[in-house]
Amino acid sequence: MIELSNVSISYRNPDQPAKPVLENVSLLIERGEMVYLVGPTGSGKSSLLRLMYMENKPDRGFVQVSDYRSDAIKASEIPYLRRSLGVVFQDFQLLPDRSIFDNVAFAQYATGSRGKAVKSKVLHVLSRVGLSHKRRQFPHELSGGEQQRVVIARAIINDPWIILADEPTGNLDPTVADEIQRLLIGLHRSGMTVIMATHDYRMVRNFPARTLAVMNRRIVEVDPRSLQG
Amino acid sequence: MIPYAIKEGLAGFRRASFSSVAATSAMTVALVMVGLFVIITWQARGVSEWLKQRVGEVELFLEDTTNEMAEALYQRAQATPGVAETEYISRERAQEIFREEFGEEAEVFFDGAFLPASIRVRVEPAYVNTDSLNSLVTEFSSWNRVDEVVYNRPLLAKVQDNLQLLSMIGFSICFLVLIASIFLVANTIRLAIYSRRLMIRTMKLVGATDGFIRKPFIVEGILQGLISSVLAIFILWVLHVVARTYVPQLAGMEASSVIMFAFLMLFAGFLLGWVGSESAVRRFLKHISLH
Image (cartoon, rainbow over all chains, first blue to last red; front, side, top):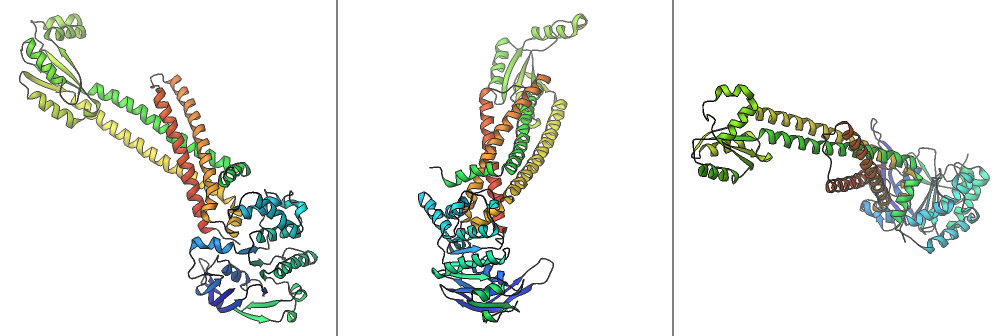
């Protein structure tokens, strides 16, 4: 379960007054849900995701993810929270000097896993995203869609229960974007909670799910089929 | 099986070869600077000891006395704390020295044995300062049969002042160089770590603890520090050899001193690499943004 309770957050730039992004927002997302966050650029979708993986903390209110509450979590506990999350960004952020296999295995090594189990797990998740045949290649040898699949493989290798995806299809053409979307829906059907920020309304209409619009510092639930644009 | 941090640390050296070379070079320069000052200080200490030995001589002129009495005073002077060496100069020997120094013209002064017997005391370098010498002079003057006690007070004051000034200048320069070197090393390591921000970001994103992220960077920093030490030792050795061909008076180093110096340099490199990388990665982890 993810809960936001009366959350307010502002951006602070050194020479400018604080700009409020979210004000007094409350929200509950149950385990296993698929949720879209929609809204124009700068509306606060990414800020909302950052609150969930606790890169930022709210100015007021609290965010709770599983047993971790933003107003009580210690800095040393944040890595353990992140092990229960998988984060996917629009810019793929793959390590260019490592093979696809190593990029995915890296997430296992970084959390202390070792040995043969890592190898079999990496092969398993790569086959799940349809890329086991490209495991020896390097990121620059892959297309954008393939690179995003690798990122998803890296995000799910530590068996998280939530996937937080920030515009994962933003850099991809519609056909490839739909493939990535099907992959994320597949993960949701296998039991994962998927929260995806997007402004691709076409995709939201094609693959409808619970949709939250972030606008005017508030969050409102909308009908995905009603989205225009 | 090699631990992950060591494997990654070694791999990091290969992967980011440019930044590794930059960090190693910066540390080598810093260690050469520090090593150079250690050597210069060591050489300067030799010169200062030599100077002090020259200045730290006290003459005890004796009244007319028997040989037994002179011998007793000589023994007493030798047993005095702070005295390194003593030499008894009899009236006859004093005349000989006078003759050696003034030649034929010395005969003009000869009216029997007019020069007194004396004891020449060479003071230990630690006692060669105005205060210690004054208290020694006071003590020697209080002895029976000692007529007069003298030492080269103006020369000592001059040497003392100059050595103080020189060591102050030396320490100031050394301090400045050390600060500049630490600054250079810290910035180069920070840049090297910044060049691998994507890796750090990914590690943080998948839930690696800060301690886990730091380890490979520390291994790499220590490795760079040790390589820098070896390079710095080699450069300093070449500089020392070249310097001795131009200034043969420079003191050579004993094998035990060379080994100790090499160990000190290795330890300094180890410490510089460790502290530099640890502080740089700590600071970076504090401010890194994941998006």
